[in-house]
Image (cartoon, rainbow over all chains, first blue to last red; front, side, top):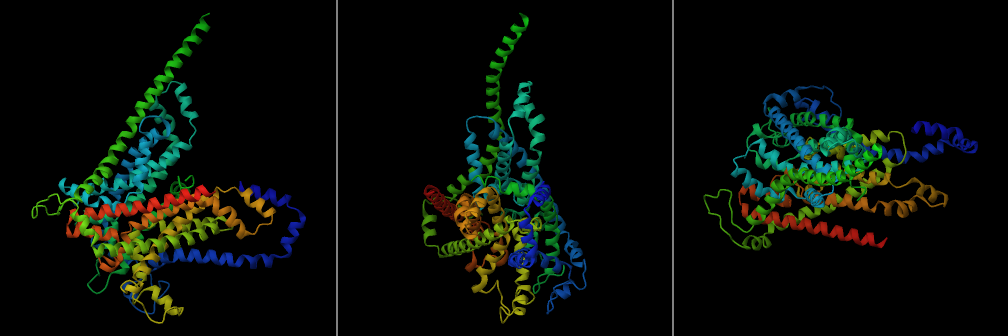
Length: 304
Length: 312
């Protein structure tokens, strides 16, 4: 589309303008230098910490703790990655985080999706109340219910279990999916379902046969954001787990002692390797679904 | 004859069918939101009620030692004289003001840059999502290593570029501790703010700028007269989101400082009180206080938004 438009405007551009462009390519370039400098600065500022973690994860442990620093891994090694997995705790943590985040995503998509469909499509008493409840939950400080959850979880004998985390993280994830899916479903035209009703479909049939295929992209967006949110959670995971076999990745990485760790030196090479293992899949996912994620993140923000 | 008959009958069926459909939809709608509402009640509203109740008791985590009893406002009275909590409020508010300010300014610059047409715009948008995708705790660890006083790259770069004349222990030195944490948060969330603002910029119709160009308005003037006013609603949303997040900050501070008293945030003070010390009753009072402080911030923003909206 944009290339076609560019071609059209290129052919119809007035000769005078084209001459002007050809005459001062240098001035144009010079004028744009500060702008590109700014772009480069921004990209370096954003990208450098990530690069440094990658570089540190590939540098042998011995070389990490020598000065002067090398800005490029001269003798790259995967030893840090092997060490990160050596104790088994990190593998456990990866598994735990995946279980918690995946379960939460499914629960939040089912509960949030049905609620969002009803809110976006039907008129019924309590419709605005539902939206209000979800919106106020997104502003909810997690810490405000920490003590209550802590006592409730202990009373239910769920302390140091993944169930406790799934239960308590729902406060973060459910409003998110409901909100994104509601704004997504409101954009879809009603005509299709109405056509289904005219053809004699029940509301349930209309939902499964007509709406569900249409909202699949919305479900992907909401699901991704839900998964990433659950994956990042720290406060509850730190407070409600006790033993390394129940840690999630965030707790594991923040309390990494590692194979080479001792009282004097934090095993930064291993930590950076663990960091890479946890973040690279997230970054790949994010880049693949870039457009969807941005639309989900900004849902509702523009309309105010 | 028969065809007219069937048309009439079909019309009648259709009429009664719609009302039945509406009733059906209403019942279905209620049934569909109920599970979500029950979940909200269970994980948010009920615990909030429990927290408020607990704040009026002397509940300890190990309840066997001191039996739980109603103490009225005693927790709240103690809270007023709690200097450690007051210190944590100051730290949190300082952090919030610094980070939200810089994230907004830098986010605006980045959004404007990405919004202008240039090659590599897609690459830049992709790069912007990287800090957002990295969990906060992990960002904190990455930066903690970069801040290392002997082998950290921040000191190394600073020395090479002659910005500092000796290595600094950024995290442990009280003078630079808050600053070092703020930089991490700014790095992590500026791109998010930029994305929000960018979404707002993209719905401003191009014709406005074209008309302003024709009228000979400078770029700066266009920014003040077109971009900023039309972006105000988005700016408010971004500021509210960021402030709420900053006020409940926990992760970065905890990874950097643990429970170090001079750099506790409200959330860390509370978590420590409840989980480590086990003073659930007093911790609940702290929770309620945090909740109210955040509510006050929201109220200020909403009032400001209404005032600025009324002026236009």
